Figure 1 (cartoon, rainbow over the protein chains, first blue to last red):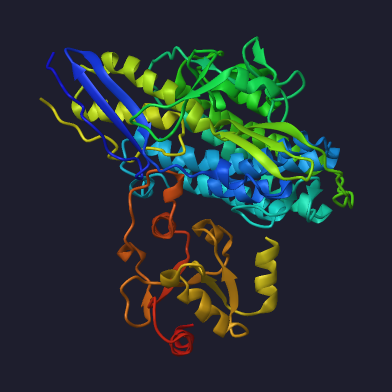
Figure 2: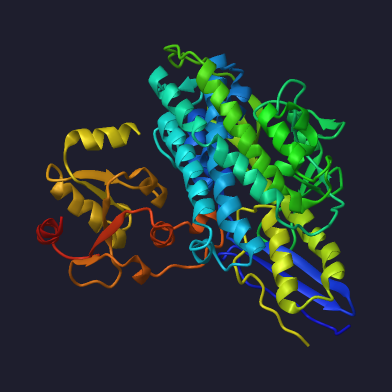
Length: 423
Length: 131
């Protein structure tokens, strides 16, 4: 076997890099790091009023802006001791589901699928796979439309607020969203069939699969942080999730009680599959994967199954929720600490705030899914390489890219993610 | 959908406007659009996904073209420079329009490209000729 060096590095849209060294089939260096500059959001919100955190932190990401809004609101309400109405919670669920539909459809078809079909990009695929890409656009359109309807914007939503909603959807809006969701049910089922038909590398991660887990639903805004029966109360998350730095990365890495772990759709499926909608259960049976799966490549399967579930769940809310004219109440402020944890497209998102008696934020902590996955993804690459080292350099690169992309990281990798030097 | 209904109901051609009013080099389309208000239905777009809701057979877009010295009309979207689709953040206008054209959705794309700098009134008059 030749000695090879997969040496540095290219940036993933300027935000991440991978340095790999391989000698005699052994990985000598494996460093997956984010090179994006620190963004200081946790510092920016300190000194601001409690009801500003959601709008400020939504700017962390244009893809997951709804997620940050809901996580921030949940954490702040937890800190000041406010309990939202049932309607408010249902509409927050609906917004979170809409973002998940949009994000999963985009990731599956425009990032993952070209890898598996051997194309450079979705545009290159388009002449042969029009029907499939149109399916993705159909689902994205519905997700976008729902977010605009609920939150007044498709990016960086403004209607969701601490205490409730600044503007409520009408019953007609709910009906229109339900009708639109009905129209993409088949698209989601066909997505499952397509992604189940692809061939995935056989690989088992040593990481634990963590997600929120509830005793009553496919957890999204509720539940504790669990891997199987190993559970942590959400308020205690910092007693278990430890963040640490590496000199080659500007992003933090994380462990759970000293062990590596991952979050995301496959973790949710492993922990909560019994609460999937009947249609999603049916789809899961068509899949060849058996749960709990230890294969991170199955995150793609899981996202496809979640598309079906998310549409069903959103449809149920649209059909059953009767909109009442609720105003945001006057909220008495009290000092406190609050944690918000929600399941967003890429995994569990944490927001934590400490608010003083004047309603001013004095401390903030945010941990994104990608930060939680980074260490496990790096160690997965280290374990994955020996099994593929016999392949050509192009195949090795593609397989490593697929592995990274299966995590659906927010700094996803490019078509030419790795520059390879063979020595 | 509501927005689409309003656009049709207003009986005016829609003009999809891209740009960022906070960036000097990307603000011209928004300034020009304001001068065209009442003549066309201005739809400010925050992301290319906004075009998913466009139901016109000819989608007319107003945007700044880097390096352009005069108003130009682009109908061949393959001329647009697109980067690799690396992450969901790269789902940009060029990628999206190319994809729409590849998918052959039966829509014609007309991009009215304007310079980043110049007199907005003069540019607006030129744009109006192409609407």
